[in-house]
Image 1 (cartoon, rainbow, N blue to C red):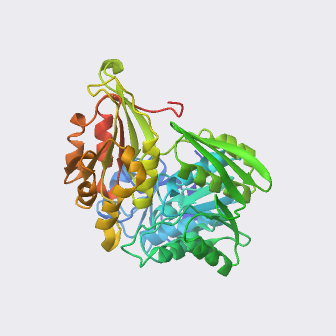
Image 2: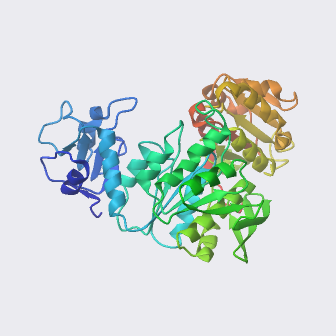
Image 3: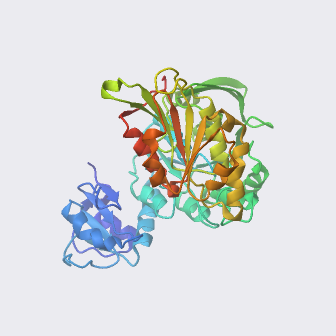
Length: 480
């Protein structure tokens, strides 16, 4: 593999000290999954990363970025010693961005950031080589880590920028320095840290503060706080390109058709009418995809190539990925479908997921129960502030929820929804996701479709894994 960081380049970037020469082909923060040749970054979170330096070096790390010589590691080991490890990682990120010759796009928003980031990866992959964030690396360490991993010769780079509190987006945007920024939507999330949704919109709009000169921000015209976002763009002197179904956006969504596990859409831009398709269901996905196409053109990419590429996009794990689980030897006992929405949850995302779920078609006559069912396994929505109980209970009023046969709930917050459900839909309540996961075997049957959704911190991913262990699991094809 080509060199990503030489000792001299890393020293110049960080101002650190490194006594031995070394060359790194990657950057890692996890000693357990480190690849030979990686630079190990000894970040401190639940545990001090310096405790794992010796193990990382033993596993083949080229060097380690540290704030001190760790205990049990010889002083002549390949170490890059800096004053603070996170500051050192940020410095590597800044240097990586400075040497990068391609075009950069960053996406933020209350809902849909990671899926949109993956759409951008797919659409731009038809234009050239792409560097993109792994999973949901969108925070104070994930963004600089993604930068530090960026090879200088890629054509495009895609970043996801998130936040939990005020003042977090602008510094990350200045680190990334995108040519194009996109805001998917603004919803009532993280209310524990913000006064209201307008404050959330101001924070999301701060992404424009990092735009390169001549940069473009792509905004959702349909989000209620669009005026707040547009005002942020105008204050920064940034050109805004809009997408949506209302008003007069430059990219107008004209038609959406959700059919089973795919979505087809028609849109109009610059007098052109064009059609596109996604390998996942959901009107909200069609909307985000339209924003992606606007961003691709703002970056100078070709719309036709991007449209064709998006036809092969499918939802990422934890954000709508679908699994077929064959029950019994060779699937002799039928199958269930599992929709994995386990990574993120807020009221708007829940409502969108219910709408998609309502269109999923169970299979009748294949299990113990005559009719196939839509069964929801829901975990707590986190960081909603003092109104969290009312927001959970309010999910009972979402129209699409009426199409779900049974709703099982886990967690103290989700108890509010459980109590608000009509008796015929009320399944079981569990104190936590672990207890729910232990009982899934008796809660589903062949022909059923099970959707699992909750905030990542509610750990409902355990329920997804328990469902997959009921048989032989494989990712479903978009045509299924």
